[in-house]
Length: 309
Image 1: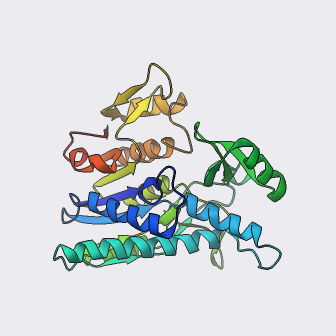
Image 2: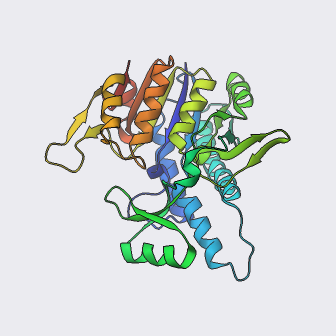
């Protein structure tokens, strides 16, 4: 069985942390340890987010503008995909070696095709970077020309265009690596958004939702299982209200109804549910949304939210 495992933002930076290299490496060690139940159980592909890291990279560029030329957003995505992929590759590789496994881990800087006329380019919605207090976010918006929004009751963040992923350019290469017994780390941060032009692909300034890109990659690899790891052990409806209800099982029809009703925020749980639903609708065997500490039980069907036809 081929499983695609999507690591959430808490795999790298936990609430209340500054996000130092030491903190991220320690968090990654805990994350990779939590993945033990999946290692050796068929073939694995790992994807991950990069929202805080790419946001911080953009902030660094804004601050250093007087002395350093700025990079485009697609290059920032590529930089963080490479650096985070390196960190995950090293920590996961060391863990596998410590278990006596000869499995190799390889990071693939991935290009993901988007449509030039995607309406997202005119409506920035994807949160990136750290959380700010309202006044601080509004000051950055004024000073740097950012679009900022309140993000699910957690604070204010910058938002950028987030076009829908169509296909992963490197999917055939990733499939080759999986077939060779390698654990690829791919579509980090949703991958680098590119346009398909007559002369070839070309990067475009945007950030792709990594859960949707994970779903596209899983389908292109003909994976049987997709696992979304996040900060909560189950999906809930009525979040933040006295009527909050956790869901052990979520059918495709129920998910569509809840999505249409706005139950799942677009910058948080919404993309995970949407990607899980599309994966199951198109023939995927299993899709589960859960937390790192419940992953073993979730894979056995005893925890998490199981998305079913």
